[in-house]
Image (tube, rainbow, N blue to C red; front, side, top):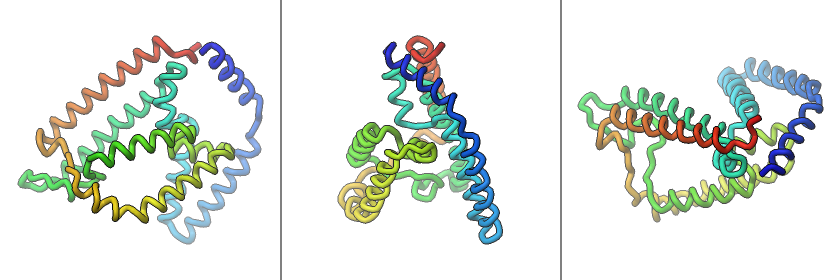
Length: 228
């Protein structure tokens, strides 16, 4: 672990010596030109482009990556990314709760298939998919967001990962109907607010995430090898 810490600190010092302001300036000019072009031809696409740039900057500066959020606590004891994901879950929980609350029928009957958000059946396919994605994420060295962020930074290996993403997505879309009829459609759709009410479900989830946040924060303070 000490060797890993020294190596990481050395990488940080080396990266600080590399001045890439010129490349950043060129890419900024290109991004602005593309934005102006899209703004003149399709305002919706220009908004997508602008939001995409903001998301990309956020991902790059925060090093946001689901793979790293589970890898770092084990390898270097850092839970900073994991805590960020927990906070993101809190924000998403509250946001979707508000959206779904105003989408519920006045009678109070909840139809999960008409609510905003991706509420899908849960079954053995969920577990298998999660395991396969987790294995692929570890082998690739990052999740989807981490892969895209590293491609922007110039990591050529991640281009191979992106190609794998594209191939897998195409195959998944092609065979989805088969798996949907075989397994997915037969699995139950579980929406906890339907059983205990939306406010109660939100409160319980926020409490759970808050407790989880403090646990990860305690773990970070006790085990983080990267802290000075």
